[in-house]
Length: 614
Image 1 (cartoon, rainbow, N blue to C red):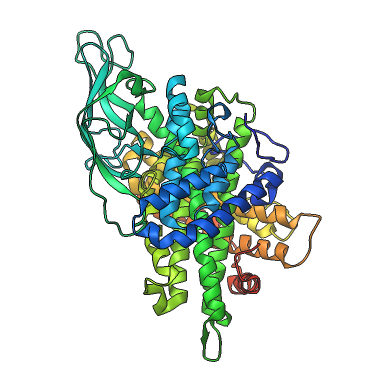
Image 2 (cartoon, rainbow, N blue to C red):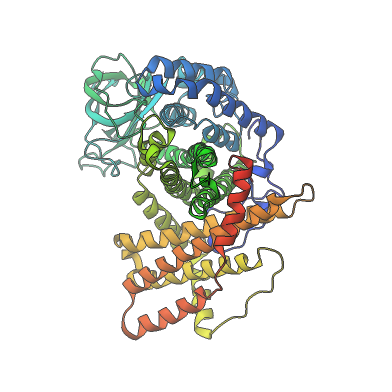
């Protein structure tokens, strides 16, 4: 479907969410080690541009010199970085989704610019690619591809952030049917201060005869609808810049629409179908945000490593101290696991899109939506991993980490927004569990049968472990137990609450945490096995990859066990609680891993390399 296709070995389409009830193989998963030469070249080009052109302009960007940001976007477009997702007929390159993730990852060396760039190429451009009419595409996409136009996306309002489907903004069609009049206000709009074209959402009455409307004789329903509005349109105004905790160099403004008249030709998609645009675009935004968070973590970690090597205390480099090495190892493991999880997700999407026509945008959206769980996992987990890394980096810098002239301080502030962007992490946790439950109830994913099979198994008593060989044999056993624990907790909660489980947000989030850890654990283990099985190459890298996978599996299992206890304590009591806790202990039983020794191995490798390296 694209100019480049992710070369997954033995490519096959794997259903979204299937990781919870089936076992993937390394050759079915896409990881950074599977990059083509083209992927590697794009990664290098993007990273060099970010290092040589963006990073030196960091102070000007942070001072909100948007002329600099616009110039850098145009320069990025000259390298093709703004047009990866745009069809060739409109001046784009139309590459695979792995490539778009690579760009998001490697351009994330300056947080404010990364946000502006990602908003432009993602939520600012993608709605027009997928939902625009031929005339809209012809008018806007070439300019967005070259950076002549910058895009923005206006969904949130002061009273409807997470509840984005219920805005106060209203659009009314004129009696002659030639234009819409929009009134309302939008909040927290990235690129709002300097964008040229905005995708704006408002409630609009569904036309008569539309099935989405109300029955004959009843009041018409108003449903979310999207519109394209150009800067300078009468009645359209941009408010003052917000002064933010982090990403201070990005533009964040309210938009005020006062009797703003736009021609019917600027309706995007169909009346009342704006929720499709919002949801489908956000799925892509989530996996791209995950990739950008990985890139941001790698950049911040690089500063931390260099400082730890150079800083002397008590007569030696602080990188030699055990507690600093522990932080270095945790950061490296987080980035390794994040790369595995994010690129596995995008590889799944590319494999699903391999046989889809590039012109069939509805099918493209449908296939991406099938991986809504994986996209939300990428967003939630990577944003929280980034927070861990920047916190460790501040601690490595110690007092200097709290001072503005050192890079740790800005990275720490910039990271926090990622847990709010693209749907808060709380909303995404509910999406993860809710989507899987919905898929199970509809029969789309045989999750209920898997839960029933597990329940029968645990009531029958202990089952012998599968005999495995290799350096990750114990981790595969741990992963199998993690999946069983997750299914057991989900089954217990479903049995207690049935359809009302959606109202038990704490339980839903705890189950989501278990699901997240299963996916990341498996991705990490599979990546390490793939590296370990390589015929070419020798040295410590294979041992380091295995050590990182073992460390992550140990920590992931702790989270899963704690979350399972939380769920079971909420859904059971008395004798039932005691029985379920006995089952939990049986499923969670495993020997501890010497994470101190593994961490020293990983940290030693990183310190010698002087950067994050596998």
